[in-house]
Image (cartoon, rainbow over all chains, first blue to last red; front, side, top):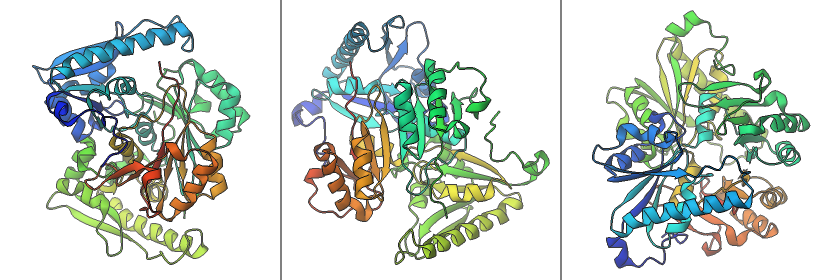
Length: 257
Length: 257
C-alpha cells in the first residue's frame, strides 16, 4: 500500500472512467538512455504533452520523437515569455502560476473525458521538474503515475566516467542560483557536490569554489550524454558562458578499499 | 574531447586490440527501468560479470536476466564473507581490497585478450557502486565506458510519486551509517534529503530526524520499484527492521508558483 498516494481522495469508481496522467522521465538527452518503460509508454500514448519555450522546439519531444505514434495527438505547453523579468519577481511568479494553472486545465479536459495523457519530462521528473507543478494541481482529481528517468546528473557522471560517492560520502546537489556565500558554505561542508542550473551563475560559482578551496577538483559538463557534450576541468574553461542545464561536478574522495 | 578521460595514457594502438570494460547501469530493480542502451549492451555482451553475496543469487544478474544471450559467458564476482567484521575494521578493509584486486585481475585477463566485458551494476554505477572499485584499478590499462542508469533514489521518488526538489532547494544524499549527531546536523541544514544505507541504522536515524524536527516529513521506501515495494510515512512504520538498500526521503518544500 502506498500511503503517500496523492490520489487517495479520488474514489474508486471515478478512477475507472477518468484518464491517467503519466509523468514519463526521458533521461538526460541521449534517446538511448530512455528506459524500456518510457519507450513503451510513449509508443502506447494517444496524447502526449510537453513543455517548450516559445519559438524553440521542445527538447523533451526531440528525445522521445522516434517513439511517438503517427496518430498520437500532441499538446505543446509553451512557457510565457518571461526572460526580461527576474525569476524571484512577483510578476514572474504570477505569470508562471497562471501558465501552470492553464496547462493543468488543458490536461484536465482530456483526463476528465477518460483519455490518458503522457507528459514528457527531461531527466528525472521528481528533481526540479515542471511536471511536479502539474502533478500538484491534478493529483486530487486524477490518478498520477511517474516513470523514473535517468537524472541529468547521472547522465553527466557516466559521460565524465566520474565516480562520485564512495563509502560514507555525503553528496549535496546545489542550485548555482544561490548567493556566493551560501554556495561556498555548502561546497565546503560536503564530500561530493553537483552544482546545477549554471546559466549566468558560473562566474559566481568560480568564486565560491575558490572560497571552499575546491577549484582544482571541479569538472564542467555541458550537454552531457548528447552528441555535442563538453567535459573539461573547470580550470580549463576559459569563459563563463554556460547554458542553464550545464553542471559542475565535485567528485567525492571517501573510503575505498 | 573528454579531458578527465581515465584512459588518457592508453595509447591508440593498444586500444584497438584490448577489450573494453563497460559498467552497465541497470536501474533500481524493475527490469523495465533498464535503459534501451543497457538492454542492448547486455544482449550484445559475450562476457557479463556481476557482483553477488556468497550463497545468494546476484540481484544485478536477475534484473538483466532476460537480455543475457544463451552463449554469453558469465563471470560471478562473489564478495568475501565479512558480515562478522565491522565495515571500518582494518581486516574488513583488507579483505575487500584483496577481493577487488582479484576481481580486477579476473576481468583484466579477458580484456587483455581483446574481449569486452559488461559489468552489470544496480542503480547508477557512479553512486556508491562496486563498479567504481574496478574502474579505478583498470582504467589505466583498458578503455572504460559507463552506461548511466536510473539511480535507486530516482526509482524511489517515482514509486512514492514524491516531488523532491523545487526551485532553489538543496538536496543532500546522506548515508545512514553516519553518527546520530552528524545525521541530525545534515538533515537540519538541507531543504530535501535522501538517507541511504538504512540496514541496522533506522533506530539511530529516527532519533536524528527528531533532533532535526523532521520526523513528520519522512517517508520510508523499501524495495522501491519492485513488486514487493513498501512505501509509508516513517511514523507509520512500527519496527526498525530495514534492509540495507531501503531509503528515507525528506521531500523539499521550496519555491513553487
